[in-house]
Image (cartoon, rainbow, N blue to C red):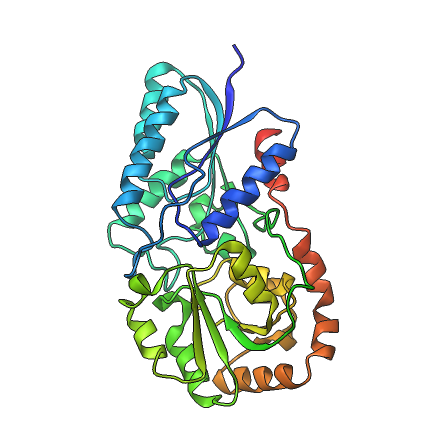
Length: 342
């Protein structure tokens, strides 16, 4: 009997980068001529997370269900997990050992306690991460930055492939550029919100749009939301569908990041494809994908670039064209080919 190839989808939430990943990976699978089965719920959970953690008990329930489903599959050849963070994976490995099943495991790496400013830097995490590193045969990172941060002992398992943008549907003609700056990021500490507030407070003449998939009933409990609400030049657009969100991105002149931890940046990539000019910190993964003119080293430089691009965007758009072309070609097909056909 032919053994199965599987993509394992963990629980994920509406409006997050994981929704883009699941949609893009599903589309790439449909276009491949290989027999790959998707296990896990492809419907996102309602996004009601208001604290610094990225998930809640719904994730725990979903993860237990995923592991049970994988065990029920029996003999499996290869499993690609969409997240390196994989509580309970040892049970699956133990089951395969009991049954004499030789299975190749792969995963997409999104972060870890080995990174500065990662939200999930719990004291107990490192030893579990070491176990996951041991179990995976192949690990995919979206940037050289993240690959180089992996502990030396496991770096040989890492391959670098930017995450796919297969599912991003963009119509550059749907909106005029009538918004100054969009900030399409979670309101969490790792996104540099205090730095963002510093920029907002010094640029009263520009309007800043902050987007969130969450509704006000949820996000009102976020401390950064309450801080930003004090500024008259900040407008929140909440609870949008993906289509509505893409329209918001398309309407903006500039997309801003102040991230302290970013390994790929779906929000930025989608905004750039939507016609936004990026203003990004000169750190993290951004120098891998964008020219120096779009990177800033301090708040003064960020403010100067925002002001310049808002007033005279045409030259910047021309210089951004190579990056936009490169980004538009990112596809999950490369990862699928590497993992399932080698």
